[in-house]
Image 1 (cartoon, rainbow, N blue to C red):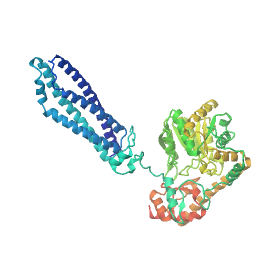
Image 2: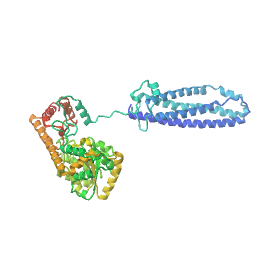
Image 3: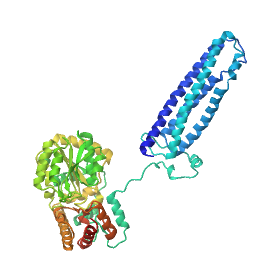
Length: 595
């Protein structure tokens, strides 16, 4: 049965319980009223110690109390609902029902009690005798009124027990004592867990790919899924400058592990803002930028979304189609409503610029628009400077709020300034924007989870107020950011020699990405692989959107042990020069055998 069906049964059971509760209370009140009437009538009768007791009054009172107690138990069942409790409930209520049926049979078929009373009541008290006989009929009607809802609630409980329980909103799970469970079901089972209603979650594709890769014993296997920059030997690349700084930090006995402020390391925040906006940015000079340290790119995106959900009037965000797989999760989890705008054209394997302009031109006024500053994930397709300028003008015209994801600054073109140009264009016009920054790829600090969130405001006063509210969002979120990654980044950015060494390594990484792109294109060209593969050279950054379909990707995984995203995205940072021929063979075979 569907969750909706179970939910309907569950709430139907609650409604019937409510009706039964009202009936039980009404019967008790009615019985007490009958008792008063009996006492009043008895006072007028001749005194006689052997006058029969008014059993129908006590029957009504007993039924009313039993109904109230059963509805109390039923309320517990409907709120702490599981199979064991349903079993107990069905057993106990069925027992009560059998007893009630016996009483009903007596009420309907045993009439000699009224004859017994008649012996002691003379004709002068005929009205009282009529009162007794009338309420005998009422007692029969009450019995039927109680029987119907009780049979209904038992039927609902049996159906719920039969189809199995799924946790519904407003219910809690009550743990049954071990001896009760053993009595009911014999032995322990998975259903005895407090979490037995938790369903299995679907696999997260990029990590499921990694798990499959790790299990593969082939010597030719190739992992091009998760976005990690690797060496020619397939190892995760740790920058030399990072190793130097870590050695220095390890030798610094004066360093401690004290909590950072809620907003993070102040010097890190300042240097990160200058890296993105430029040290000469008017927004920085005018103190219109507030920057806080975050838990890498995902953390900064989520923090920005949480802030917007609390303080921004328009809760709709437009995402490029397609976009980084975690973007929808990060933004919707904060309560933002998601819409998309056209970005990638599968026919040209390039930018759908006209579609982008049309969609943003019709976007809700004041809506949030997510952009990737450079090296678009997953397509590797970026707008040109001229196109960015048109986008900027449209965004300002429509009153949209740009939210940039800056994860690859320096890796795309080899220039930190060039890769941040799109962001700076939106800041130089005095407008407001958000920037989520990550050092995972650009410094190889994947496991350190280090990044920042910058919010550009209209005035310095607004920036201060925004920062104060960011503190309130961070405090129950993660309270304080980690110190080690911030110390590494700060040491590199503030020291001219270390900074130059970092930019040199970053340029070498960018050049290598361009090199393997060219090698892959050449390999496909030399093999005569069907189709136009020039998009590999036009796309930039860490990713290539190959245009391969899911079936072709599955073929490459099965036959060539190449692991990549099902949408055909390749992480060029995970491709070594020596692995290019193997990948080219796989692509060639996939497109020639599977169309």
